[in-house]
Length: 162
Ligand code: CA2
Image 1 (cartoon, protein in one colour):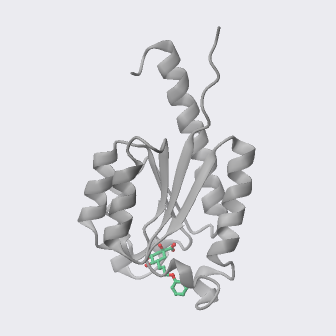
Image 2: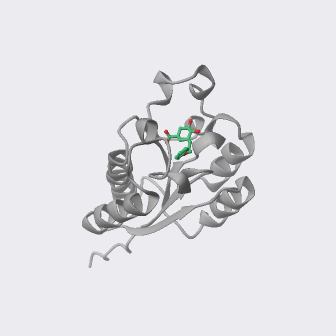
């Protein structure tokens, strides 16, 4: 008899200063607060059959601790690393170590902004990158993650992935 797959748990991580969304700089980041983005993610995750764990921290070390702990407890990671995208080799290393699928999200189009935002270390480990679509990008990232996880599950059933 075919077994019912467990509900995959997806970690949505947000880096430094994203707790300030909706409070300042609406011209760049829009008016949605992080709590509103979390609610959007919760609704999208429910329709996609994903369990959501949504977090934000201003600390690089805490973010790395969460990424390390995801190994074995989460099926995939959606991450807006914020400013750490452009500076943190350590975050990239932690993401590489988890061996989990990663999708990177940015609210703004980092390629249309200052040159120092054009490069993201995290993109090196990400299966996909969504930038410039505002909070909608988080929903699209969850949709993409659900597709990746379903494809993995199918491949595992067929014995092509262990
Ligand atoms: O566009 C994005 O999502 C970013 O990851 C946001 C980061 C920025 O450093 C990246 O280059 C692109 C900034 C997060 C700080 O968020 C703020 C929120 C409100 C007011 C000021 C900053």
